[in-house]
Image (cartoon, rainbow, N blue to C red; front, side, top):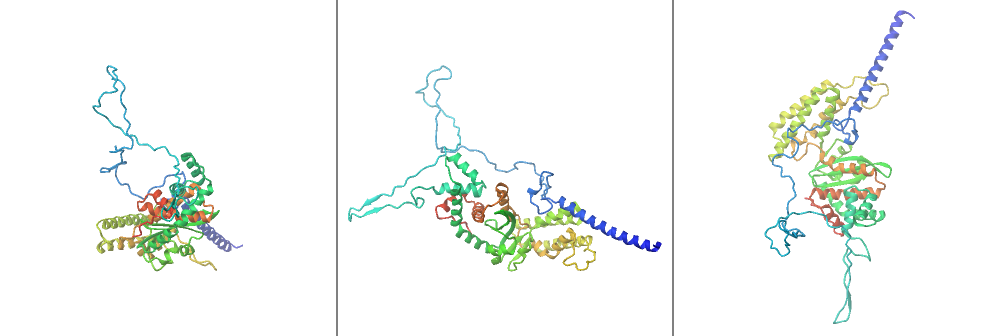
Length: 471
C-alpha cells in the first residue's frame, strides 16, 4: 500500500471514530440527563425521587420566619357555655380543722372542662308497624315502616356511610376497615358486605355524576390531567376533569382520545382547557387551550442546571414576573393584564426565545438513506420550539385573568389517587375501579364545597343523595 493510500485510509478511519465518539458522547449526555431528572426539574412525581437527595423547590423563599405569622388567628381549646354534663367535686372535710363540710354553703366555684368521645356502641332501633282497627268500618290498617327498614334486620345509612367513608375517602383497605369497625363497634362484617355497600353508593350516585359531567362541560375553565394506575393486573389511566368546585374521575384502559371520547366531557366542552400539552387534549378544537407553566418552569430548571443554559434562568424569572403581574391585576379586580403591561412582557419573552434558539441550532446531522420522521433534537430545542409555536397557549393567562398560570388544580385532585395506589397498589376489578372513581369524585366535589362528607354519604344510603351546587 502506498503512503498516499495509507493516509487516505487513516483519515477515513479517523472520521469514522470521530463520528462514533460524538454519538457515544451524546448518548452519555442523554443518560446523565435522565439520571439528573427528579420532581423539581421534570414531570416525574415526588414519589420517584427516592432517598438520595431532597429536590429543590421551585418556590422562592418568602423571607418570613417559620411558624405562625403576625395576625394569624390560630386555634385553641375554648370553654363552652353549656356543657353536656356537669360534675361537682365537693370537699369532704375542712382542709384546716378537719370539720365535716356536708351542709356547708357554696361560696365560689372554679370550672374546668374535659372533652371526650362518648362510649361508642351500636344503637339498635326496633320499628313496630302497628295494626289499628277502624272503629267505624272495622277495617285493619297497618303502619308503614321507614325507608331504612326494608327487611327484618339491616344496617342503617349512617353505619353504611361510615364504612364507605373509610374505604373511599380515607383509603383504608377493606380488611383493615373490617378490623377497625370490629374494634370500634364490636361489629363483624363480611368483606362482601362492604363491597356491596360501595357498589350501592356508586349506583345511587349515577345521576349525580351525570349532572356533574354536564356542569363541567359548561365550565368556563376546565383543568385536565391523567395518571397511570393498575387495574385488574394491567395498566390503566385515571383521568380527571375539574374546577375549583367540581371534580370528576374516570378510569379507562386508554390514555388518549379513546378515553376522553368515552368519558364525554371534553368533546362537548367550549371553554378553556388547561393541561400539560398532552397531544390528545389538543385534538379538541371547539375549546381554547392553555398550557401549564409549572411544567415549563421545571423543564427550564433542568436546562439551567444540567446544560448551563443562561437564557433558561432568565426565562424562568420572566414567567414568575408574569405570574406576579397577573396575580396583582386579578387582586385589583381586573379581567386581563393591561396592554401597556402585556406588550413589554411578550417582547422580552420573544427576545429570550430568540437567544435560546440561537444557542441551540437545529441538528446538522445529515439524514441517513431511508431514515423517516423528524431528526432527533436536543431537549432545549424541543422546549424552545414548543414555547414559540404555542406561545398564545403558554401566555393565555395574561390575556384572560380567569385562566390560571398552571394546572395545579388537576394535579392536586390526582394526588389522592396516587395515595390510594401507594396504600392498595391496584384495583382488583373494573367494577371496583369504576365505583371508586364515581364516589371519589362526589366526595372531592363535596369537600370543595364545604359539605360534611359523612353527612353527604348518609343521604346517599337514605336514597336521596345530596347534590352539589353546580353554579
